[in-house]
Image 1 (spheres, one colour):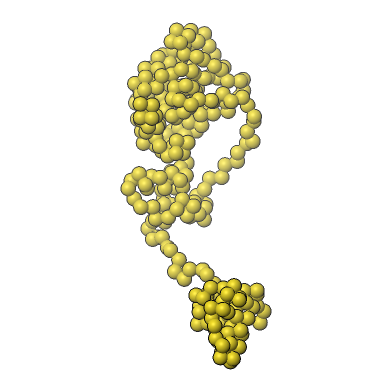
Image 2 (image 1 turned 135 degrees about the vertical axis):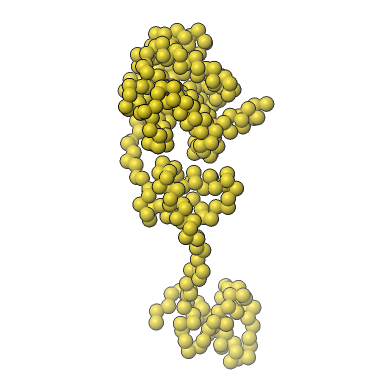
Length: 303
């Protein structure tokens, strides 16, 4: 039988103890000090050791005999939640449990493993990011607001989107067309809505579309709001608003049929979605706070 170093040490200790017994000079404290082990360790080995059975000095498995198991109904609930919310992460679900006052039955990693075994994880192929100028530098709400437009499939309608880079607070509005006049109307509603939430818009960033030229520039100058453009063909410089459009697709447009809605009904639906986004949806970038919670904490910190 092959023995490793630890098993040979146990055998050596037991042999030395046997020699002490034969010479009637038993001194466990001296033996433990000589061998470099603790007394409790010696007595544990002695209790287990059988002289003519070397398997008693073999290293035993330290694997728990009774593994913690999660009730099957919890596993089913978690997997069904992922099927209903494919874009949400395991961290999101864990934080949701905490906010609902539930005691999480497991850690986020365990949730991820359940989903992975059942092929519920969507693997995304990420493109290598280009090194670009830091356009999104902002430290207080309102210091930088990104704006972009999005074409809505079905009827010829467009969505204007504004997002505060710091607090992730958003404002959406749908229009039948995109031009300078429409943009000015959206900017007016945005500034008024943001002011109601305690956000003073200081700088706006857009792409180089014609809808952001001429009239909007004059309007922003009249309001003393700075305006900057991203580089041409560089949408990642407007990354916050671009990413929020993906959230719209995954969590709103894929679940709500908006093609049969009138423009007024669509704007009402967008208001409800924006209200949920700003007040109830947890954000990883905000340490699982909502934009409204972040704004409230910011107000308290500046008092």
